[in-house]
Length: 247
Ligand code: FPP
Image 1 (cartoon, rainbow, N blue to C red):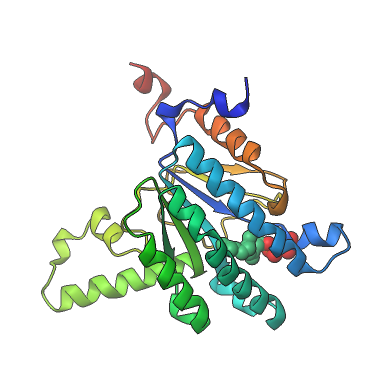
Image 2 (cartoon, rainbow, N blue to C red; image 1 turned 120 degrees about the horizontal axis):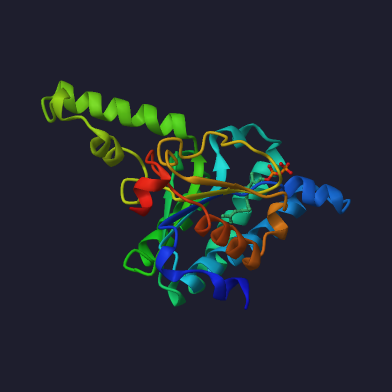
C-alpha cells in the first residue's frame, strides 16, 4: 500500500503549516548559488500544494518570506520577489483547476508593487474557490501580527466598540491575519532546524510539530504524506489524560 493510501481521510489535519527551510544549503551542496535553491524550492511548493489538494487538506499555510528575510542580500531578496511573481503567473491555472483559494498574510504593503498587484489579481480570481485555502505568509512575523491585534483591540475598547470584559480567545483570533483559518494541527519544518522562527505563535498552541532533515527543494509529495501519517499516529490530548480520551 502506498503512503497516500494509508492516510485516514477522516482524521486529516484541518490546517497544515510549513516552514520551508534549506533552499540555500541545498544549492550549496550542489555547488550552486543560493537563488538556485529558491528556484527549486518553488517546485517543492507545487508538490506540497498538489499533494495537499489530492488528499483533501482544507488549509495549507506556507512561510514564504519573514519580516527578517528583508535583511538578506539585496539580490537574493529581489530574486525571491521575482520568483513569487513568476510562480503566481504560472500557477493560477493549477489553483483554478483544483479550486484552491489563495490568500496572503503579513505586511503585504512592504512587497514590490508588481508583486502586490499580481497577488491581488490571483487572490481576487480565486476568491470563490472552496476546495482548499492556500495562505502565503509574506513579510510575515507572528509577534508583529499579535502587536497589531493588541492595537486594533485597544482602539476598539477606547472607542467603546467592545468592552474589556468581552475580550476572549475568539476575539483575539478575529484580530489576527488568520481570522478565517482554524488553528494549525500540524506544523512541519524542513532542513533539520528545530525552531519556530516567529511563525504563527498563537495559532500553533496545540499543533503537532514535525521536523525533518530533508532540505525544502527535495521535499516531495511522499514526504508530506509521511508527515501526515506520523501526525495521525500521535495521540492529541489537549491537556487531558490518555484514559479520558479513550473513555
Ligand atoms: C528558506 O531557505 C526559504 C526561504 C526563505 C524562502 C522560501 C521560498 C521559496 C520556497 C520560493 C518562493 C516561494 C513561493 C511561494 C513562490 P533558506 O534560504 O533559509 O535556506 P538555508 O537555511 O539553507 O540558507
